Image (cartoon, rainbow over all chains, first blue to last red; front, side, top):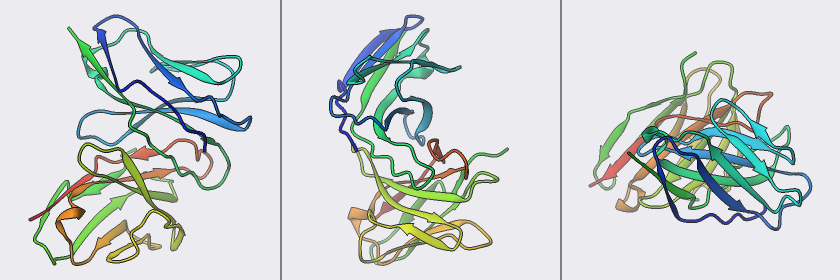
Length: 112
Length: 114
């Protein structure tokens, strides 16, 4: 699986958009980008995933660059409850086994 | 539909005792994964199971650790003769048979070894 690089921490003001970058310059053509987050003392939560097109769901938007070497997770209106560690993970999506490899992620702090 | 249920939420054991961690996957999910998170570290994959089968245990320590997912009942992660280094948060996740890309995690079991 391709490695990802994320900033260790970011700050965001409540109500503003939080833009979390992820670099995955060695991504292969059949590898997807997944985002999970982990709120303190809880299990990780799936947010969104994509291959090459931008994706949006009720939680966030995922913007993937045309060369697919980087992506950005966007929380359009961050709330205090969005304070968490955000993990960007790249791996092949198959019908079989899924071993997600979690890195150290980005610690997002949303402040009033 | 209840989420992934793990119990106990907190478990305290003395060195040398056994720890049993339980995980009930979401209804309809037939795949279970166990992850371990040491203090201030990321989550590390341990084992992947389907009903009555261990599919991948490449992240499981070779000794003292075992996992099962019987035909009936929850998945069990068993740690024998616990040591202080086993103190960690243990998370279970499940996935549906047709959406392997999404893992649903439980709230974890915090194991403390005295």
